[in-house]
Image (cartoon, helix red, strand yellow):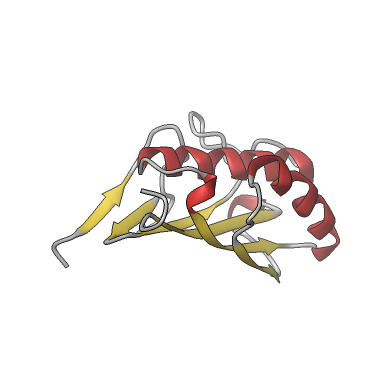
Length: 131
């Protein structure tokens, strides 16, 4: 896999395990799950869901930018929530970051997430149609 490129930026939280922030291979970018950590001090931004959702999108944006991409390049998101009653807030806040056509998406309820986070989002971006 000679065309596999690791994407890293200090503008997003460091990986807290054995993974990369993102991997680009060919025209696809695979973004690892982002939780609402502040990039500098690696601490949870807040215990409040709205602040956590915004921070996750900011972190995703930083990784996308490091790959010379933006939210319009996203084709698929997977959202993990410890409480699915937050689904409507995710929709509201996501619309501040992503415009139509929205990426394909799944939302999954989970028992727990790293660092006590309420949300985690991972994604796939494509470059072949966006340049």
